[in-house]
Image 1 (cartoon, one colour):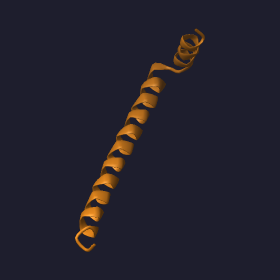
Image 2: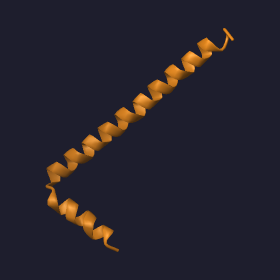
Image 3: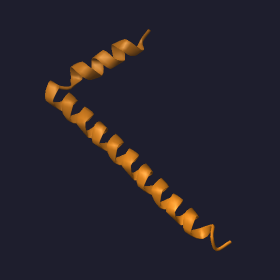
Image 4: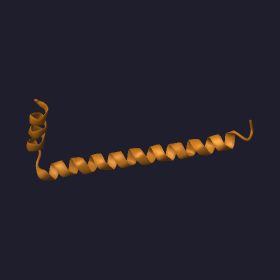
Length: 55
């Protein structure tokens, strides 16, 4: 029951501009993370495909 009050406190402690900057930053970090995971898995797939015929 305490958590919504904490959340409201954090929201009220930041201005609207700060809040949107934080969420935009978090969104960019998430997108960057997801795309790097995608790139790594693609590279891993390519490496396994190249490695398997030689076995």
